[in-house]
Length: 391
Image (cartoon, helix red, strand yellow):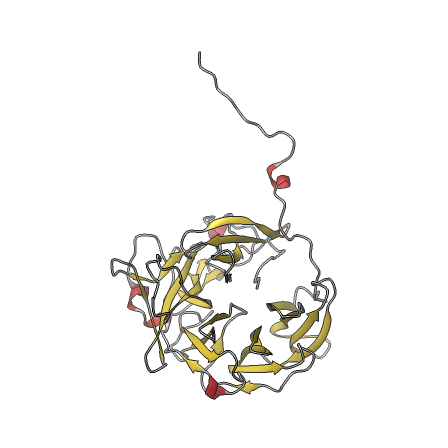
């Protein structure tokens, strides 16, 4: 006799059984006009005292809005001393794409106003210095991505545009991720205390134009301009590129990319390919003279690697190394329907099939390649309710 057993969960729908880790929240800011005024670039850090410091932007995306009928932009600093239950608006500052972090005995916010700039607080975020620019050239980009500490240094990445290349639309093909290094206990407002790595522009990488066997780019892409997947002007996709860079270092001696000298750092970036769950990657090597050189990663076989598997790598994600668990923790966006035909997408879904932003999820990994699902952090009830750009 053969028996066939079925295990059936009858009590609750599947969606009701999934309990997000952090669905309850405190709103630091609510848009008075959600159709025209948006929140951008949230960043957060914790001070030794336990105080939380948050930065974020408010913007009309360059469009005129009432009451003054001109573009609106504001960057704000807030603090909390009760674990995030209540917040105090401390100041506004004139930088975008910024992130807060502690180095030495000071609190800093580093961002850009075309060039890279930084401000400093010596009283836990109550008052702030004027901007100090760390360079004089270029147009720079980033998000509130991670900050890494090693060997008494602070490391972080800003991204530099290589303009005048004829790229239109979202310009991520002309970006170069630039690793920056400074002694953590130095005055980070002084440009002479910083070293910038060499620049590797995505468009200049021969491997970015080579065919591969795993479908990148996933949708048709022009190398210089937006391609509209739903003619004549619907569902536009920008050229291949990378952006929003995190920096990591492999300290496990068993890892194939471990550097016993501790001079190699790896960059994990959002990959604009039309496909989900791949990140773009590169590496930076510290030279004997203190300079830093950016290059592609190579596999143990010597094969150049421009992409690596990464849950949510198609969108902004955030990576942190936890010394206690010896794990990398990844906060990013979960896709549920990236293979839908662009012309069949519901009107309430924004952008491209790989652009879902309403489910924020947590993963962990010992090596940045093999990822384990840790939980659903928060979710919106519709595609228009973003839970995204976590820091």
